[in-house]
Amino acid sequence: MCGAKAKTSSSNRQKTLKKITKNSTLEEIAFIVCSEFSSIGKTIVLTGGSAATVYAPEAYQSRDLDFMIRFANTGSRSIELLTSMGYKVGPSATYFHNESPITLDFIAGEIMVGETHIGSWNTLQKGAQLLHILHPEDSVCDRLASYLYWNDISALSAAAGIIRNNIVDLKKIKNWLETEGAPVDQTMKRLESLTQNPRKST
Amino acid sequence: MKAKSKLSDQPGTSIFGGQSATDLLLLIYVLKTTYKRELAEITSLGYTTVLNQIKNFEADGVIVLKTVGRQRMIEFNPRFFARNELEQLLEKLLLSRPDILQCAAQKRKRPRRTGKKL
Image (cartoon, rainbow over all chains, first blue to last red; front, top):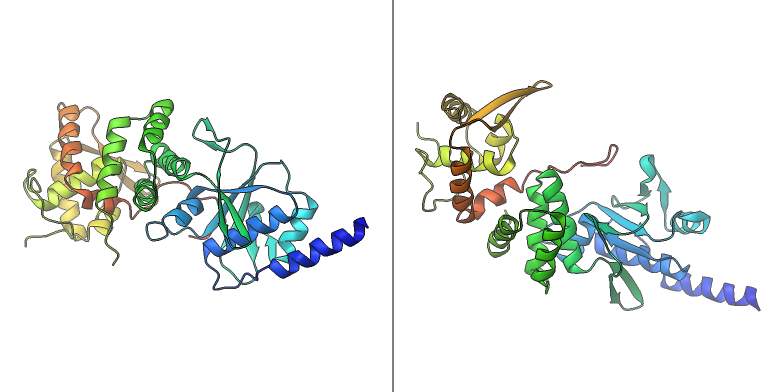
């Protein structure tokens, strides 16, 4: 009985499994990988620059997917799953696909943006597929953390792109900046300047 | 020869003697740490123009250059007598010059793990 159930779920997975090809976009791969992990009962949440790319594809293009995996080690089932999708582990535990140039990284532990613990996330749906991803506000703060730590203006620009393309509660951003002890006024003004004046694509 | 950067004409662009000088000073302020070739690259100014402007800023005591490896890094001079006032003015100018921030955004400054493709 139990075996039959497992067989059905496995064949269902085969039906929904979309193939990752060299032409798959970052967003498509994110949906496929997250849905596949969900099918084996694992929650992975998209963070970092790749989350910014999903929210503002024209403003920022990441080449890798950074997933936070909530439950410590990825485990052998996860590795089997990744292998079945065409991934092989490379140096620094980065997963490389045999066709797509987009790589995967899994970071174990709690989701943090700066010093702030993130307890909830957004779940996007696309047909039968799903993608757990930081809320747009947290994604903005995540990019702002890169800007604040390394003075990375490209990360500030990505944050502006997310604000431009999504409904974002700016109060939450201000509160986060205050919590982090960042220069709130200067950061918000620079962010506003970039939000209102997007870079013209060349 | 009058060099002109690819950045746009806005009020206050020539406040430091010319558009190139103002653009470069704003970029040094935004980037915090940079080098001549990077400035030439992101502004599309000639390397010689950048070199001459940097010499002038250094002679005025506004910036300092320090050697890191083989690179001469440019930073604001923390001992410049009007540093705070200058930075306040530059911050105000910056908000009317989103093109400067857009230019600075071309360069990734955050670290990338060894082995990851650019």
